[in-house]
Structures are given as C-alpha cells and as structure tokens.
Image 1 (cartoon, rainbow, N blue to C red):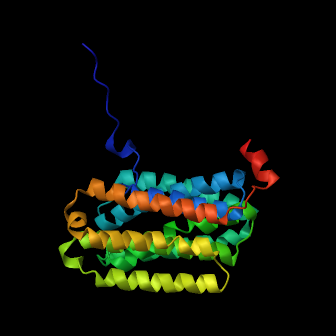
Image 2 (image 1 turned 90 degrees about the vertical axis):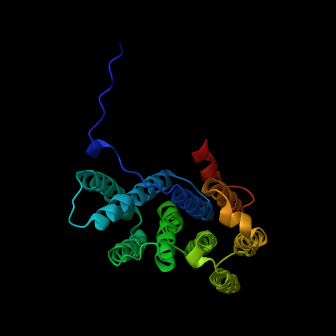
Length: 272
C-alpha cells in the first residue's frame, strides 16, 4: 500500500488572485509599455516580476479586509511575502529610475481606494473596477520607466489607452446581470472613451494606429449587441474566451503600432 502524502497546513498554501483575466490585463499592458520603450533589458525583467507580485498582494489584502477582525494567518503571511518582494524590487528599480516614484504613488492611491471600496461594500461597483483596471494598467508606464529610466507623455497616454480598453469589458460583462442589463451605460462609456483617445491623438501623444486599436473594443461591443441573447445566456467559460480573443487582438495591434520598422541593435543583442 502506498503511503498518503501529508497535506501542507492551510496557511502554508500560497494565495493567488482567483481572477485569471487580470493577468492578461497585467501582461498585456506591460507589453505595450515595453514595446513603446523599444527595448527589453534586465530592469524590464525585474519590473515584470515586481508588477506580478504587486498584483498578488491585492487578493490577500482584500480578503483580509472583508474578514475585518477575523485575522487569517494564511492571508497575512502570503500578503506579507508578496508585499516584501514587491517593495524590495520597487526600491531597487526606484534607485535606478527615480521617476518611478510617481507610478508607485498612483498605485498606492489606487490600492487605498480599493480598500475603502471594500469597507463600504462597493468593491464590485463600476467605478471601483475601473480604478482596479487603471492600477493594473500602470504596468505599462512601469515597464517604460524601468526600461528607459524616464517617463513620457506617450507612456502615460498608453496607460490611459489600456485603462479605457480593458475597462470596456466591465460594461459588456455587466450585460449578463439582470440589474445592469441596460446598454446605455456601455454606449456612453465607449463614446466618451473614443473622444478621449481622439484628443490624445490630436495632441500627438498617441500614434494614429495605436489610438485606433481601441476600435477593437467598439467592434466587440457592436458584435455583442448583435448576439446579445447568446452573450447573456452563454457559459462564463465561453464569454471568457470571447473576451480574451479581442483582448489579444488589441494587445497585438497596440504593441506593433509603436514598434520601429527595425529594433535597435541593443535590443537585438539583448534578445540573443
């Protein structure tokens, strides 16, 4: 007879964000920032690891806030581990690129706002979910700043673009719920987002093709309107695949649109 393996104590098991979609937002936004920087170096690698662990801090932080006085060692321990790694990497990157302090401040403000929303029991509100996407999309200027040692208006415009695109999914997913089935909020959001991006393009903060990558969200919203009943009744797995495909198309267009015709020699030597 084989001996049964002893299971690790509950508090020893790592905690990870249960929402896989946020990983796509994180990595997709990070890639757009790295593409805008037109280089990938060791600082870029460290920034990616830092962004990943910063995202993992959110889950135990929010769960523990929901539990309030009922302290759970598992969330405290792993939240502390992820937080320590994040802070250590963030400090190292900050010493190399002091301009990253502004990104850290914005991320901290977003995390505090998220916590306040949990306490007020409005964690799943549209406004708070937009804040969450905005914080995760900060990985774009983080990648740019860590790679180049500076920040630009173009990098911040890319952050806004990513926030607007990924936040559009909030309004499509809400269509599956009885209380938020109205199309009007989604129509207003996509219209306002498009006007913002037209403004950024007009100010030369975004290239034309990069700004036009948001049309992927408009096309997706239009298709959903045509197959609204299917979208509302389909299994969540099918909806996740549907949303992921459009997100990947957007990420590909946004990244390619800011890359030069030929990568700089330094980038090629790094890849080799």
